[in-house]
Length: 167
Figure 1 (cartoon, helix red, strand yellow):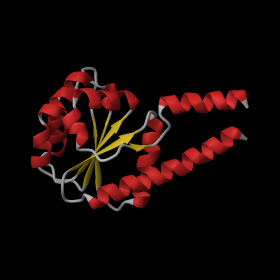
Figure 2 (cartoon, one colour):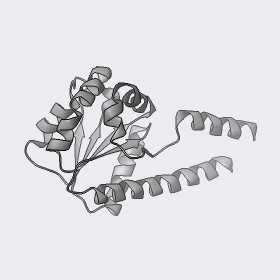
Figure 3 (cartoon, one colour):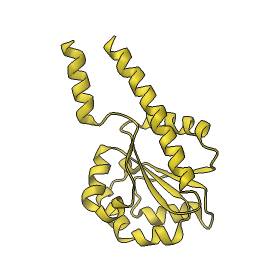
Figure 4 (cartoon, one colour):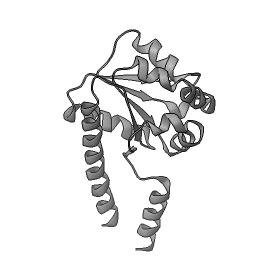
């Protein structure tokens, strides 16, 4: 019974978070904004993106970073060329081999994001990448409003598992 309740809460939470993400993209349409979507499960990211099409009419482009990516700004500009999508989702940060260097270069290049991109930029991160953003790119990370979570952080996940075991 507890797992069903947790599952229902997770689904309701995902829908609410997806609506928040769609609203944030709509509000910032036509100008740069940084949105952080935190999800520790790649499959859930895809589910959220599928659901997002129901809540947003924006033409959302996706960029998948390769493990060899060295600079986020370069990866995005190479992918979109001269187009300005209505919104851009960046996925695959967790697979980048030199993630620390990529994050540091992102912080250094942060002003170029605002100058060149006239659309909301959604970075899909997990808890580890989010921590690295805080430590290695604090100025860039500060541009993001609040982080939109699509699953429980690891600490809450452990707590809920412990509660289920003790029940």
